[in-house]
Image (tube, rainbow, N blue to C red):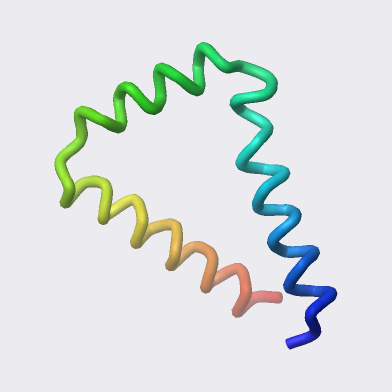
Length: 61
């Protein structure tokens, strides 16, 4: 894999991850407070869904 593509992808991840705390810190805090209430299995499910969604997007591109 080209290192420029990897760095661009990582940059996009940081950009997208940083948008919510930048634009709506109160909502970001509420989301994290709600996430603390979830069980480990529920968090793993969301992690798995994210990984599978990313793999599908990579496969489609």
